[in-house]
Length: 118
Image 1 (cartoon, rainbow, N blue to C red):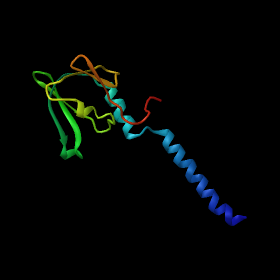
Image 2 (image 1 turned 90 degrees about the horizontal axis):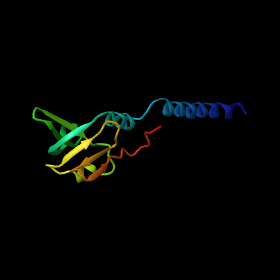
Image 3 (image 1 turned 180 degrees about the horizontal axis):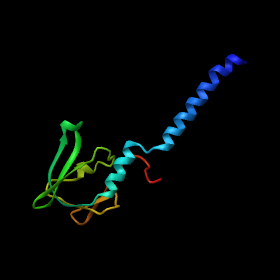
Image 4 (image 1 turned 30 degrees about the vertical axis):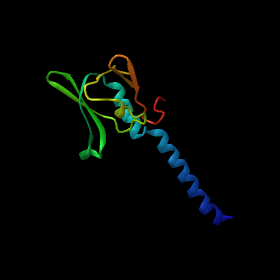
């Protein structure tokens, strides 16, 4: 009986610890989603590339004003928004939104692949 408890108790402790760790802090994907939602963008796509220096992340560059360019990394998007964006497109994203409006009429929903709403 004692020998069975020696094996069972560490397994139970391990499962409880893993469960507590997953509850206590959001994933990296959810942190990126939260940062994405806090930002607003409005500009013209002037560049589109895979950032090879940064793990080949799909990246777009927006010209938001004459002196300001903004780089947007779309690494966690599972809806392939990157493929639907072309150089010269006008993109707008309001703070709190999880989508871009492209050229006024097209809505591009960015999906990070996890439920981060909770």
